[in-house]
Amino acid sequence: MASELIPLVAGIIALGVVSQILGDRFRTPSIIFLIAAGLLLGPVSGFFLPEPIVSQATFGESLSAIVGLSVAIIVFEGAFHLKIDKLREAPAETIRLVTVGAVIALVGTAIVVKLALPAEWDVAFLIGALLVATGPTVIAPILEVVPARDRVEAALETEGIVNDVTAAIIAVVVFEVVIGHTGESGLVAGFVERLGIGMLVGVVVAGGLYYAIRYVDLSPQSAPQNARLLVLAGALVSYGAADYFATEAGLPAVATAGILLGNADLPYEEDITDFKGDITLIVLSFVFIALAALLQPQEVIDLGIGGIIVVVVVAVVIRPLLVFVSLFGDRFTTGEKLFMSFVGPRGIIPASVATLFAVELRAEAAGIRAGDIAGTAAEAAALDSAATLLVGTVFLVIMATVVFEAGLARYIAEYLDIIPMRAIIIGGGTVGRALADRLEDRGENVVIVEETVEILELARNEGHTVMQGDGTDIDVLQSAGAGKASTLVAATGDDDVNLLVSQLADSRFDIETIVSRVNNANNVDAFEDLGVRTVAPTTATAQAIDNLIERPALAKWTSGIGENGDVQEVEVTSEDLVGRSVREVGPELPGGCLITLVARDGEVQVPNADFVLDRGDRITIIGDRESVREAMVFCHPE
Image (cartoon, rainbow, N blue to C red; front, side, top):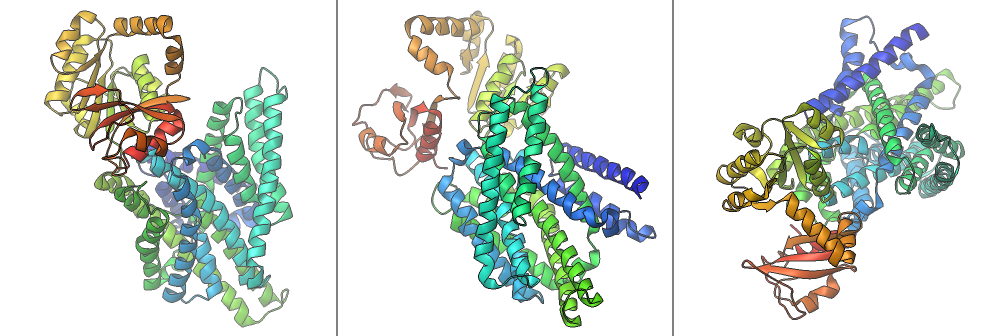
């Protein structure tokens, strides 16, 4: 058996890696290819072979443990990336999304399952609980393809991570009602108990890991490696320890530990993040393919028209309802709300937990028939029916939402025009990459165009979106998105190239803001005659040195712009500001920032307290980083 299992596991992992590569290549969430690979190994192979390549018997009784530990790593990875700073982009809306929104999803899904399918209320609520979870495993790939604004990403990522945990716990409590191990009165107590135990274990493990990594000598030669291994072991230990005290308390434990460690000032954090990311991709690929392979097509087909009704109502009625109720107010635009409404695919948690529940239900039914468990033949048949209905419904919703919502996410975003305007940088050298870092930190959608392969790979390895080609080629600029770009920066070391790029950007694409690096100060006039804003290294260096001599405090503060402090210019569009003085508006801005300049009709001035703001004014806000970002949204909510 082992001789057959080893090459099979190796093959599944290889298919998973190929699926990830295909997802990157076609800019499509890899989960679509993972499901296809699983169906190929499972039910599809059963049509051509005496038995499927992967079946329930392949992993035997170890399936629950394999899936449980794998899900722990996946949830920990998502929680580790959930940064508190990013949550501040939409705090109140995020809380409503994971509370009010989750309740709407749970109750609404349960009702439609009960009405559209032959399900008892307990089974309907079990399915509803599982389908609350969207999950980082399907949301993160979508956000890699769709560079939405920070507030959208923060809300969707938080919803995915938190709902993964709460959905799993609620589902376990409801499941105990389905199999008769507890009554309805114990639902709330069971949920609170598991959540509390999990959070307590997560805090203890995170504290231990933080102390070990920061204050214990982990060996200078291999400290990063040891830190990576400690974090991985900690994720598994927190899951196992919490699950020992209460079933499914492991998920809140790993989520708590992940959030705490991800927001702590850990040494070797970059090494830890890269290592965990690779491990998670392998684990996710293996589990998703294995679970998809266990699906029996007949379980989905037997749902009939009722199953289609459930999918449609969940995707186009319940999801938009919970999003618009949770996100009421003007922080999110209507387009952003619609995008979030139609992008809520379900992922690994519903698939894994539904599969495990189905295995337990069928085992319970088999025990009743064998006489090992008390019950009647009718009760055994009801358990088998519940297992079939559970798996079929959950996987049908997963496949439909993943294929249509995840697959069409970018087209939906482009149609709704919610992707931030693109900034194109011609030249991926040191200057171009440094500028890209700063723009991306502000949430801009940046593309670097570079012709040299070595520099291109360097920029790609640093996480930038890149395109190989000649920046003076109109087709290359068009492919890079110049038609929708708001900003183009010519940052090469060749003034002739920069001048030609600037001319094309102005004459062929009518880009609003064109900035060019001018390496020879004698060429500045040629650029400015075109209306191009210029930066000459010699002049910029002289100004920086002058600031260090004459304005050292200002020079020190501006050197940290984008990290601690920030200066941003934003157009006034909010009706809360129009027609009001700086004196009136000032107290309503987030603490720690000020309005320092106002540009109107080409004139720039330092406003006094009685200066009245008007729509279209461009105001410069200075202050600490997070306050400035919040003020930008307040002044320009679109």
